Length: 101
Image 1: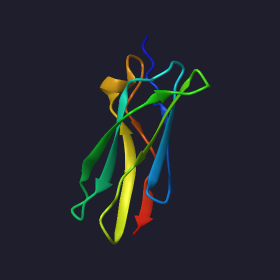
Image 2 (image 1 turned 180 degrees about the vertical axis):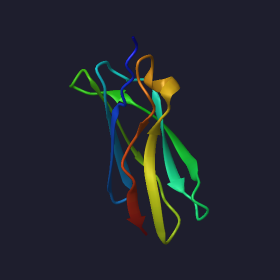
Image 3 (image 1 turned 45 degrees about the vertical axis):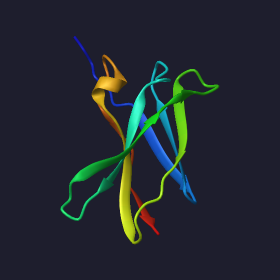
């Protein structure tokens, strides 16, 4: 029997710098995630691909990056595709964050 679980993905922001962390039972360092923005039509569009790096905790991979969003209100999230998560894992999606610029 195969059990698939969803990785824990977080997204935070300070100024123009975004930070993401992905927690799984094994390290995902070297894998990538996408920063996505919701359009006015309700679709998610990938804006930036970010490579994860290893952290001191063996089961956590993280990345910090800068990105300038358009003026106004944007709804953003981080997506870890299932292909990057690996066997036994589903795609990971962070909670949606509202960013006002």
